[in-house]
Image (cartoon, rainbow, N blue to C red; front, top):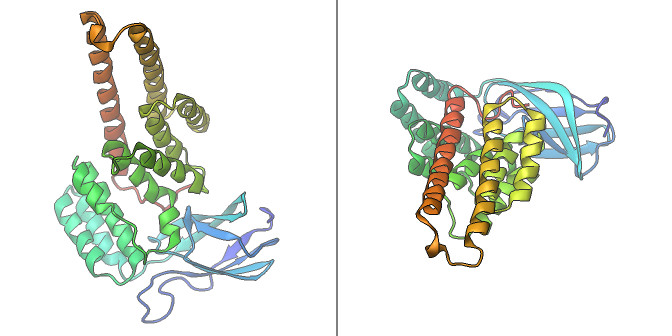
Length: 312
């Protein structure tokens, strides 16, 4: 594929056809050097259907997209092209109800907003729409500080959901945050795989995926991987407060680990002096405080932010 040759034109945007319950947009992607395995993404969200026409054209149907502008990305094998093309999605019929929920949320009427989203999630025929409103409800629960309900609302994936949503960076970031706050598995390897999968599936190279993976790796002592991700996120956005806080947190974790090894060397942990125990307790307090700061800062960013629109 040639990034300079890629361009896209939407010949129709709205419900796929009159009376269809699936609100995807039909799009013709025109470019060069396309192949049978070329995948198209809108704001990081994989297209629902992709039909290879020839090396210069693809017919695709988007997943559900909120009205707005999205960047077009393409992937073939391991090669990723970040196109300069902007794609505009027009409203689907369901958007009026979602707009009502968003207006209530903006007025801090969160419970009423969640009620509207929950109704859509249980009644709408399109499962990609259901995933979106589940996602927004989970975000609103996070704003209320209710991680348990957020986790329940974020049970996004169903066999009827398109693969695009299962691999979307923004949807997976919610799973990453909840896996870090409330592990969904008794197997730590599962949580690590979830975080690692989010990084590998993201074609937009969003540093937030690595941010959450670094936190998860640090929790389970994988400090070298965590430091590598820290380097990546700081290179992407060196002034972002949460990334800078991550650097301080990893530095504290490394220092604590070295202290623990020194303190335990040649003796059992019960033999720690009172001062050593105090230092460990204080360090764990800092750990919890740092985590709460990450969550609070991230939650503030959720208000009035569409999870996919204008992503990159």
